[in-house]
Length: 232
Ligand code: JCQ
Image 1 (tube, rainbow, N blue to C red):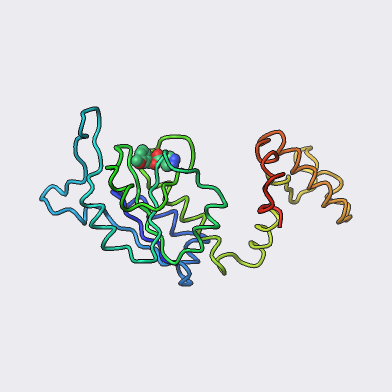
Image 2: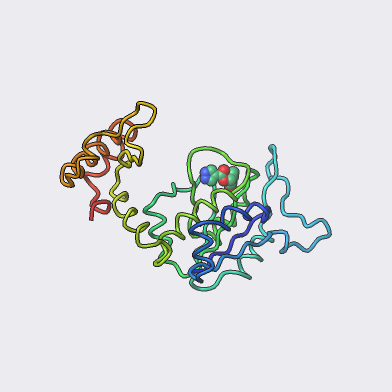
């Protein structure tokens, strides 16, 4: 899969995508990631990317011309163009599963300044939010999307990682996990996990996951009755 990113802050992308599973996927040729500075598609001496909003008001707006030129240079017939913004539909695991099917993603990083609406109208296939808060720019949302999508690429996870993933992807929060020692500073691991009774352990974990989900994210349980995508 190829992912291009269009950003005003390409330096942000060094680090998070150079480690762990994403780096391994890049090294293995599963992910071809290319980060581009939007200013590369300006033609004036100041490399202007924004301007004042028509109709007045505070702040600046990202100009359409550099974004149009960049998208036209980078996108092909099969490219899905994504804009990151708090006004988008919420990026969830189901959206990651959908995006990973694409041959090519082009992620346009929005900015707190806002983006000329003609970018949305003419270029953007999908406007995505990673949650209800305002960030300074779309770099972090882009990295979140890239991380979540990359680990779904066939071959990106090792055998153990994939197995773990399946057991956690049933629409519930995780059950509690413990490792050695069985007692640490007087805090004991639940007896059932030390018992060796696999059926009992599975039951205990299912119950813990359900209780924890009920307490912290009840809307996940409510949604599940009508949604068989998370159980298969
Ligand atoms: C993305 N959740 C928060 C901020 C406007 C028009 O585009 C904008 C983009 C941003 C940066 O992204 C976010 C965000 N998901 O703040 C304002």
